[in-house]
Amino acid sequence: MGSGEFVRAPRQLFALRIELAEIATEAVQLELQASGGKAYLGAGGGGFARRWREAAFVPIVTPSLVQLKSELASAQADSHATPDHEAAAPRAQTQSGAQPQ
Image (tube, rainbow, N blue to C red; front, side, top):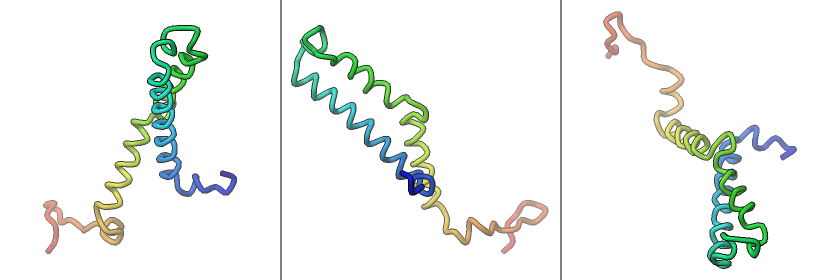
């Protein structure tokens, strides 16, 4: 992190955050399945309820997973939309708004 890698390539950080949130969600789901109702209902759960709440909070921490996924999708669409030379030099328009031939 001290190398500035995520500053230069924030999409990698976004993808990492999404993956970590999914792992946290999967982990508490597996814990619930393995422990059964005792994890969900009471003292025998050994902190499960706290971990469940924390895992539920991860996707909504700003920026939320929805925002991160949206940013990744728009970056993906931008990279496939037009070649760089076309994006850098838009075509001139005539006064009527028509594209010159």
